[in-house]
Length: 209
Image (cartoon, rainbow, N blue to C red; front, side, top):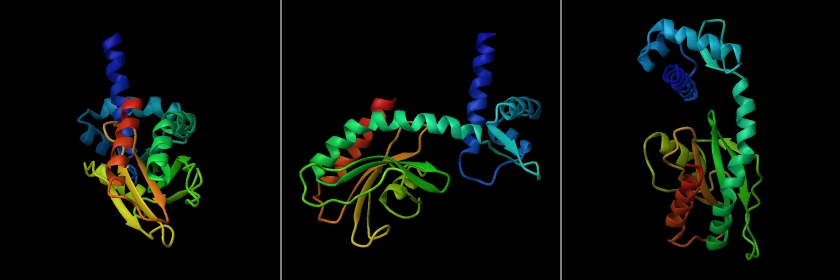
């Protein structure tokens, strides 16, 4: 019974991850095909997840994530922030630029943790809760790169704010998290910035893994 329960849980989590990919929902038949599960199994999973508010069906019968997932996301964000702060603080001090952790929310990136350097005369003020399209800025591009299997760093200039330079790297190895660690500044960045950002992202991944 324990093994059967664990298998049901694993299937339910796989279904939720599939729906979290930003597409415009799926039909139960599409879910059955993509998950390699029979339709009766998918319908049982959907019935349970719908009763808990984690999935919903629209007027066309397509399945989407439900608003119950937001409750979990809101609870996780403070934990992510606490885990990220040591790595972000070291990164900000090393590079002399504002460091941040950005997570994907649909087609947007959301800054959930920000640390400013203590020793610079000027730095970019970047607010926690800031949101921007994933297609703009180094943080969002790093998350899109993660979806393509990339683990290197990305550099952009002036995409979110005129004159601002950004470097970001994806947080890899965590299937449940789409996120990036990055820095942003108005000043020049040393060649070592990219590798340091990658190291900070790996440090966070290890802390969360």
